[in-house]
Image 1: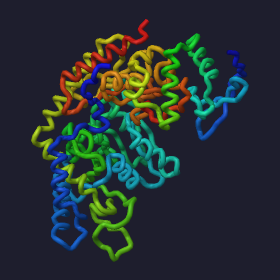
Image 2: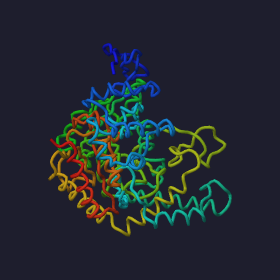
Image 3: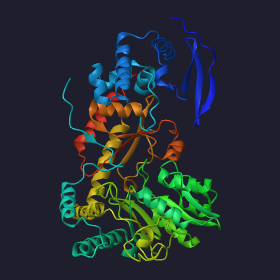
Length: 123
Length: 389
């Protein structure tokens, strides 16, 4: 999958630093932690590229099961799944999900699913 | 998938949970019987409700070592009470001394006052164990200093600050000391008159074991603050100026009588159980947790293990794991509730080197058990095995 990428640029929106990257021929906006600013900009191709940058050479079926569940749940409910909903939905423990993604649950699974950065300082 | 065990609640520093059944039942019963607007109506029940409220002011005054029940002011919580006292006490051109241990309930009002050009402030550091030095308070006081505002027990580290010594420093300099007792009220004995504290802010829903939505301020007789909220007080209604006698000077609108009843019932509960017994129980549980976590590889603990100067709070992290993920796993896989992140105290975390992601805070309460602490340690041991190299 050949996603072209130009170097990251930065812009300021509402006090948060926004990184602008060209992925797959279009501009995509990320916040300072690497989360999508606009969840609708998510694509599978982009996710493969971001996963490689995280150290996952190729996303397997188990990765996609987690990513798709989180993303579909978010699109349907407007929020991330509760912990117990995530476990039930993917049939894995949270420890297994944590282990599956080098960045863990938040900076791995949630980020790759294209959900916005949670504002709560606790998540 | 195996059945999840009962939730282990270790987030008592955020709010104690569950509340004692006796407190909840008393709230229902008394509110059903006396839940009218206190002191506002020309009927006996309103008078009785007013007497109930005054009775709780008297009890709180005694509980905290105040010197005038009329100077027990009800507010929504400790943050509300701190806003009331900070904004009502400072004058333009003034200076405030506080610390890097503070919660945003102190930091944000101070920052707001600085940004609006009314005051300046300095924050003294804390040492590697989590304590502020009274000498640092003395050195930070300037001729313009109008207040010293300090937390009694850190909501991040659990360390109890040497308030009596700091009170002596403040008395020597003639500067009022404001105490944020959000994490100590109800579990650590407090005597503001002896300690030289001019005002104390408390909340009802933490160690006092009352409901959310009620807290307050206890002011000493020699410390006046200006009204910063205005409205109906039930007296002097002909006057467009807000009543200036206490407690009305600092209260406006109908009181939270349900919350006040809850506070009263909670004080009864604490008296029956014995605050010292609760403190010792919580310290023993926190110490057990600390010692269990200290044995685990990759687990880091923060602050000094001085159990005679701590409340039941333990801050931890697992090397190379986000606290948010650790908290999610504790909840999702082990049904253990903790608080992760910055705990609304960003400068504490900055000082600890955890300013970006924070930590995992375990905070025990009177209903936790040694078995629950064992389960928390076992859970952390399993989590710390993830990605172990």
